[in-house]
View 1: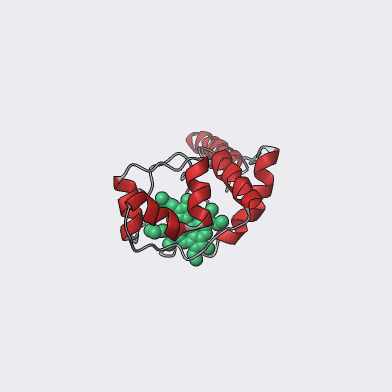
View 2: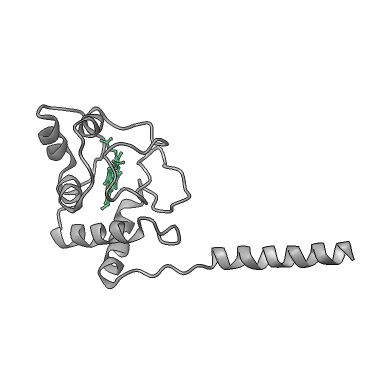
Length: 146
Ligand code: HEC
């Protein structure tokens, strides 16, 4: 009897866990193209909410609207990014776009001096930047999307 109710409880737990993992990610249309663009970032960044940052770059799942340089599990922020953080830079559309187009130029501007920077990548295509920003905005607070 006890065993039977325990088994029933277990079955309910298994079903509940199953539904949780099966939650589907729905992205607004403008973010769909950005998901493809995000593949360009994956040699260094992860986008899954529950994955730790890799040594190659901070996790970007919650980067939209967050203060620069504040992923606590990423320990290799450059002098320039630490300066941007201290200056209170927050990752809005404009800031992400300017940064990703030319990380060094952005950090030199924000710091007001020559600084070391760490993202050796530039996305020059403005439309792709818009798309990837729409994607970052859409996945924030949606753990099922990455
Ligand atoms: C070659 C590796 C590499 C690639 C490719 C790359 N990044 Fe990065 N990214 C980094 C590193 C390293 C940092 C930390 C920079 C620093 O500390 O100066 C960073 C930082 C960032 C930040 C700031 C994060 C924070 O925590 O404040 C954003 C936003 C960002 N990258 C966006 C992108 C996007 C969008 C793409 C793809 C279009 C991309 N990156 C591609 C290595 C990369």
